Image (cartoon, rainbow, N blue to C red; front, side):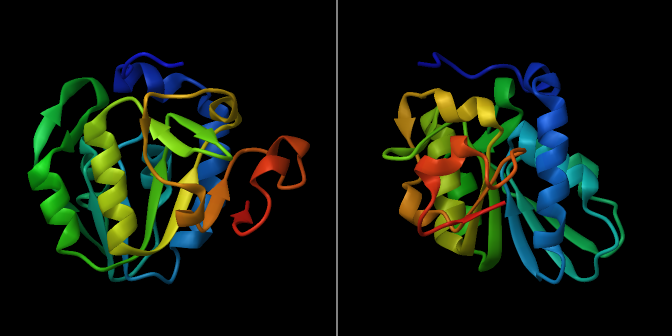
Length: 190
């Protein structure tokens, strides 16, 4: 079981190749949408780095790194949720963040997780991150969960999104990889 949140900068470099491959798979899912939510994870930060050549896309994020990366890109209108700074995760959480998220109607939210279990769903290391991800899922028509394969074998302390709330699971693995067998069924695998 994972014990506590790791520093964002340290997480950014961990499994970087897998995160970049996941981001490549996520980019086409953003194209053509008008409003998306991005969480503060290092995996979704890689997606933020790749979002280009879009028109009239609204992005809502609680991630300071994602906001900094996207705020001046053409074709984007970027909103930062506000909230309490969680320094180690480089994110904004708490009631202000969740209230801001609930003001939006999102075509999709793109979130990652600390761990993923086919029975429990996603789980996180802090309740603040759980509340933000739940608020994004509630505001979104479609939930896209991005997780590198190392997260398929771990557990964190706080339940976040049940598997029936996830529409698409994106990993660096080939969708036919047998490590994804427990997740097959009602969600799309990329």
